[in-house]
Amino acid sequence: MSVEETTSPVIADEAAVLADLTGILRALLEDYEPDDIEITRDTTFHDDLELESIDLVAMSAQLREKYGEAINFASFVADLELGQIMALTVGELVDFVVTSLNAKGKSGA
Amino acid sequence: MTVLKVGELDVHLQWLPPSGEEGDRPPPTVVFVHGLLYDSLASYYFTVAPALAEAGIGVLMYDLRGHGRTSRPAEGYRLEHFVDDLDALLDAAGVTGPVHLVGNCFGGTIAFGHAAVRPDRVASIIAMECEPPIPRWAEHIGTGMAEAKAKLAAPEAIEWVKREHGAHVGRLTKTAAKILRVTTIAEDLPRSRTIDPSLVDVRCPVLAVFGDESGLAGQREELESGLGRCEVVVLEEQGHSVLVERPGEIVDLVLGWVRRNAAAELEEAG
Image (cartoon, helix red, strand yellow):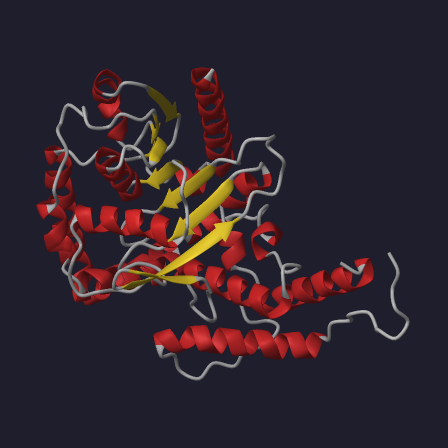
């Protein structure tokens, strides 16, 4: 496999991923008409955002649409129990996306 | 998000393609059908679905009408509506061959209902903590739904659930209360079309899984004598939530069952 010199490898930008994820979460939250909530790396999905598990499924599907097949949230959380999944923070998910994208960039897949 | 137009509904579904190699034959497809009010396809997505896809099984999950991110019409919640939705969804998703229906609680009831009207389409049923849609089920569901509706209508109920069971269950309960409030589901379900109590119309193999503490395992003898081929597994020290609390064992049971059925089909085909 050859990598063209002119193409820079995909190095995902953490701030950009956080912004994307915030946008996706705000769209999902609209259904619940929440008060204005600040979303940071420390925000948790269920305690802070009060999302349901089905919202996380929708979110993971949207991450896939945005970033491609490299973002496999279902397999990322496969070893976690539902309670642990709901207790994840936005920051942990951002790190997962950045790591997945960078791994994809390095493998050239 | 994957949404398919199915009749008048926008149905939210997730498809996990099989990732392993199962041999020359097309890989088996499992369709997961979730339970009532508190449930959605997330119960499968975050538990058993990824492991089954990795083991070479195609996995289709969807949100029932009124639930998750599928449309919530105000009325039309008898069992036959759910059965028709499943049938139309398989058409819309382009699923042609017979599928293994895995149903949790009411999802299993839908699976039995579907197998009774479309035997050509159902390779087998894996029913977790479920009652087939015989007249006795309609009585049970009527009582249960009326109780739930009365209980959850009380304003303090959701706050109590939140305190006792945490924020996520609180949120799910809020949704359950809303479904009961804005739809006719509690009134419609007990008026569902039922199947013959002898279960003569269910001709596919059935794997029934129960928790020993839930009381539903008492149906064992009826299922075993009524159904042509039925295996019953009772998980010890386990209540109603077998799927969420025992996902590892459910994966092994489903995988073993689907593979044994595929092998039996091959043998029959000669």
